[in-house]
Image (cartoon, rainbow, N blue to C red; front, top):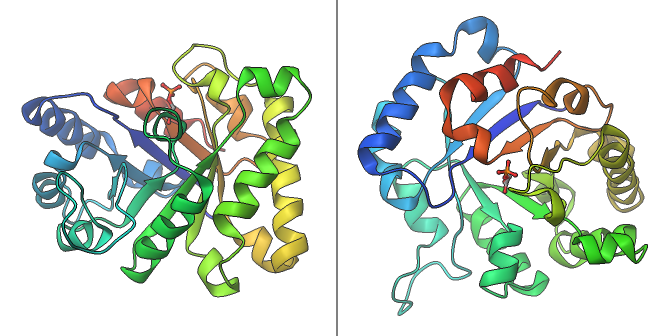
Length: 253
Ligand code: PGA
């Protein structure tokens, strides 16, 4: 059975003090009943990781980073490697968020290398993919998502792909307040799982969690999370408020 996962991507928000405040609130609000529903991951800015690793120790809440470099070490001023992330207790890393694909021109080939570095360091990659509105309107959503999946992931073998979590994040739904309808999201999730099945077989494809991200909030979470192939959420805006984040977790059946 695949896992349900709710991950909060804080992006470039919250001072250290605010981040500690939010993580502490979430830690105290998460009861056994809630944490049994899913894995919970907080993904703060790099600067907060080490401190939050201590704060969240023994809470069951896991820590993720928003990016890593495609090399393990070297003369790359301003960059952070998966090896360094591992040393501060990071268990997950976002790879290929659309904001990085857009603003940092990250390509599928580069992202494939980043995934390799993450897995080598025993960090699970959360690989983000999704189409723009233009691509959807042109009828190319399936094709675009498939090429992101193939070029970013299909070099992995069966045991490696099981360490990857996928996140469908339609670019037009991120931070816009527009959410994909449950039907639109489920259709892409099902299509991606089919592609994984063709490449890795049914058992492996069935064990991989595929999250939805893009303006998920407490009001639309239960419908989205109720879809057969949606195994959790990657939450941006609504992860910055403890009550909203917890309400999304509670929306899991
Ligand atoms: P959003 O962001 O929930 O604010 O739309 C999601 C994401 O970018 O991961």
